Image (cartoon, rainbow, N blue to C red; front, side):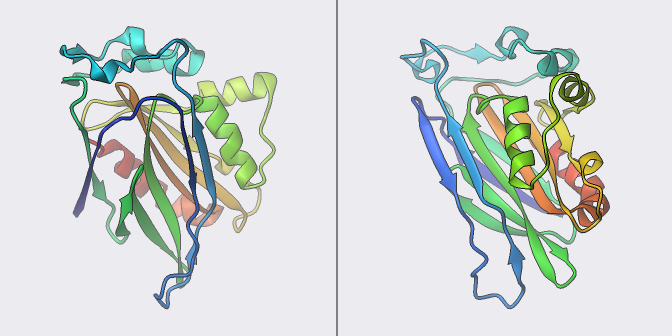
Length: 228
């Protein structure tokens, strides 16, 4: 099993990033990649980012967003403690048969999953804050694969049904699967995980045909839970 790792120092202020990966590598194996847009804004009134403070910081439930999606995550133990300003280290176990490429900047790595002679990508991206929150990211990701996002009660029911996890490192997270909204096996779908560590969020996202994602779901879930 391959172990990946990355060290990233959180930045203050507004961050706008556009991640575009084109399938133009010299490899003979065709690659399928999907455009990702992420925009993050600082918390209201946060003119002096707390990572510059000089005291120890323990993650508490009071730091969890006050919405119904995060409410159940308060019940998951999270024994993480580190000093603000210290670089956050993320490590994971790359699933058997997946191929890892080093990332750059906020993209920690790209994992490639074989698909009928080609490959689809799984990205690991870390950002400060929650990058808009769980629901906003779900809506955006659904629109990227041409899924009509549910609204009102249906969206709330979907959010309430998301699987909550605790990673090997003690971080809280949620697993996301669009399979129920995708009628055809060859239609694009997404598996994703949003994992919170203090003032940072790690986004793991695999996009590809629904039937491939069904086959790889167990491996994807193990990847998310291996974060430490």
